[in-house]
Image 1 (tube, one colour):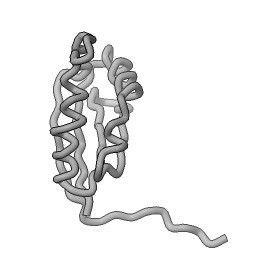
Image 2 (cartoon, rainbow, N blue to C red; image 1 turned 60 degrees about the vertical axis):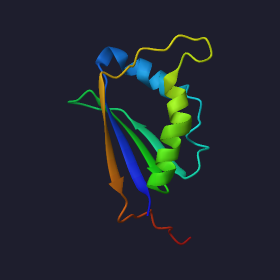
Image 3 (cartoon, rainbow, N blue to C red; image 1 turned 180 degrees about the vertical axis):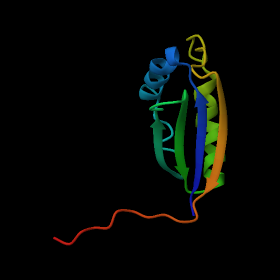
Image 4 (spheres, one colour; image 1 turned 90 degrees about the horizontal axis):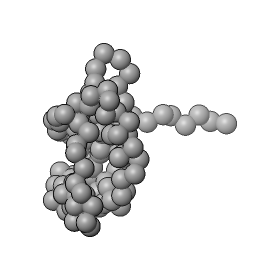
Length: 110
């Protein structure tokens, strides 16, 4: 079954818009990566400054290949002459899970 990676980002209130804009403008390399299945950026509603970046992968190997290739290149910055941007998050933690059960909405008969 698939693996889920959740990047837990601590984002100060004044950096929320910056973080969301950066994700909106991202190159999109994750979507075309082998084994990629899903992405969501989850904004906190109340009581926390923690954003969750949810990605789902066919396998741990697919995730690691993305980490060592497209993700690493995208986060190094400055390679095209542009200055490297200051991180919008003040800290991050990566959570890893294996999908052991799943469900989808049932299709209703017409």
